[in-house]
Image (cartoon, rainbow, N blue to C red; front, side, top):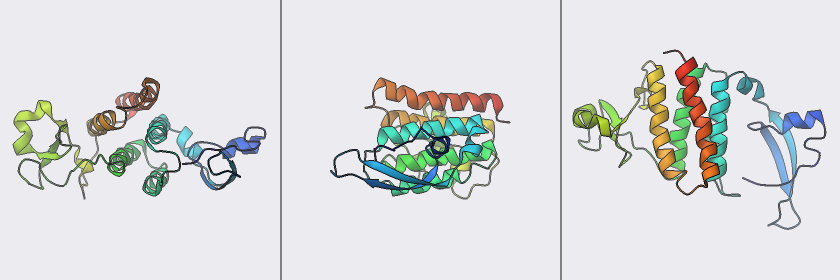
Length: 220
């Protein structure tokens, strides 16, 4: 991530189209002094704006991502994995909201992993079983199978089956809400703990909008 100035960014209508969140661009950054803000020269490669503004679900999803990345990635820190994952997500903006939300939740899981707070869904933390995984422990961030976790259900997070490798299960509204609750728990624990109140509010404002939209508009 780089900070800098853009000459004439808002002075011409064509420039306003270029400088939008989540546009894919080629850019050149230059500065006489390495530690200064510097200047950008930018060329638009692809705009995803039409797909974003057509869906409040996608708009809220990307708003949450924007705040998460801004608050948790240091300036000039290498972010190749995050960029690659985000680009793959943007390329799926043409999908229906339900399918896109599945990809969005997976992106949050991947982001947690990249930032050092992975959720292990490979096997049961209690028995080592790799099948019938239904929960995630909030303490260990590891999966728990149904047999081991049933009596502790109230203390565990639900694991939506669509997050498991090679899953072809149908996605319901409750699955999406469980997925957002799962990632939201670990985002709040690990990615907002040291944030200022305003920054934390920005992250969860977008996520809460998203949850409300799922409750109201995504078919069950």
